[in-house]
Image (cartoon, rainbow over all chains, first blue to last red):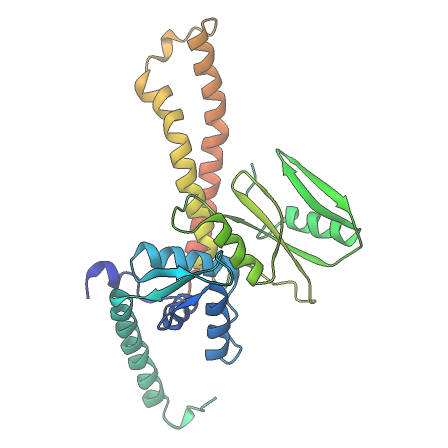
Amino acid sequence: MNNRLLKLSPLTEATYYILLSLMNPLHGYGIIKKVEEMSEGRVKLAAGTLYGAISKLIDYKLISLIEEDKENPRRKIYMINSLGVELLNYEINRLNEMTLNGIKEMGDKYEEG
Amino acid sequence: MVLGLEHGRRKKFLEDMAAKGYILSKVGIGSYYFNETEKSNLIYQADFKGINMKITEEEYLQMYEDSGWKLATAFGGWYYFYHESDGNPDVSIFNDNESAAGVYKRLLIFLAITGFPLYYQNLIFFPALGALDVYTFHGFLRLFMFIIMIPHLLASIKIIGMYLKFKNEIKE
């Protein structure tokens, strides 16, 4: 894990979910739907955030443009690349440590929601 | 200087106009133009796309369209979108402060690129201010550039302030 990547952590909730949804190739609209589905309707990506996050993920070479959508060429399809997977792994381990500690320290005061 | 609609009077003004039956059709320097239409509850948001070679304007507008925003008009790199209100006044084009701060970052980069020739010409390439003679063509041009520099500088300071405001409120 290089320092340039480490600086991106912690990812915002939106950026994390966008990167995660791109484990499979998707266009912008596909990302919005996938993230809403994964979070059971809790995270509704807003357009400005999606645009900013995709630009940033491209700049850091975490995702790559795959192709244009055949039905609507104005929609571009992206997918995560190896650097993105590396960052996701780091982030998931970090979040996992946080939640496990949370559950452990809270003891019987922890209520699963 | 146009500085977005995220909060403030301009956003409220446009939304009040929509409630009276006037929808934004064009933005000019310091002025808004409207078309008469049915009275509607709209939410306005403005975004500055900035210089981005990797995401085309077409793809950018498609993302907004896919999220239910309609383009009212565009002016000076700003895009004005509106959305039918469903009663929730907090509908935003941003999920978090990091992406809201991104607008001001893009604006600053844009201003730095446009401002460079202005400052370079005036302060570095021709530093001798004493020799300024406004009656020659070059002297007049320099004076003119100085007058442009003032709002450019003020806008830059204001944008840095807005950027820091959002940046300081970032939560994970």
